Length: 310
Image 1 (spheres, rainbow, N blue to C red):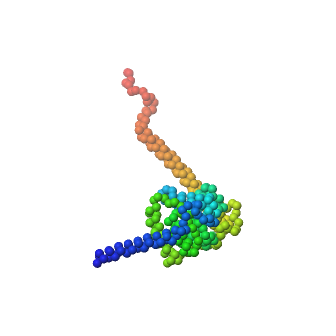
Image 2 (cartoon, rainbow, N blue to C red):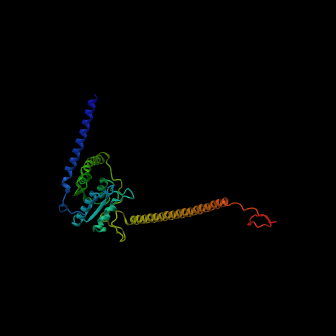
Image 3 (tube, rainbow, N blue to C red):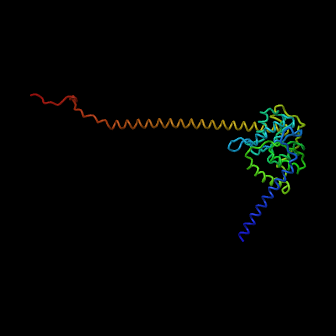
């Protein structure tokens, strides 16, 4: 009985693995005609969507996936294949901002800030693809990422009725672990599409690319918000910076006061210790000195006693 259970369990596991690998291969086959490995082969589109990832691993090692995507975006823009770069990534935490990191590196590479669009709510591939259509009003665009990621992104686009192609940038050599994780990511995507029928976590107002409203000259770049929202955001950041500076000044003043108080306490303790040492030395000196001899009136206390001649 126990042996049959073991055999049945192993059979189920093997069947699940076969199904998972089969679905993985099916997604690759379904999207292969929309993927381009060379920038010269890319069709010309208005928008290129760069899917975000961390620039560094937790150990501080540079992430080659990030490097290849940024370089692919630069090549696609400089070759005239796209006019705007939509940077879609995670900004769930204040200290972690994928779109802004990509924007800084692209501007440093010579991409005009006016041709860079930021999407701060690209928490998942599904969010990035669907928001490009529903928020940024773009239905035919180029996705820029690695080939395995291209396949999942394009499958989501096809399922949602979105026209898209993908520029497959190179992958690092150590891709095996990532590729195994991708199988489970694709199963998760299929679950989101067919079972849970999920939508992006955030959508928001329609912001076409290029935007029809005026962008202030002093704006940090082409924003994924309206000018009014941008001004509010800039004011909030300025207030946060000022509050941080005030807090830092208060902490510095408190630290200086604590150091001054400690120095004064140490000096007082030193003086007290020296005074106590002086008093103790004086007491020892007093104890070691003998009392003076008694003096007889009318006699020289320093004269010696001798017999009187008769």
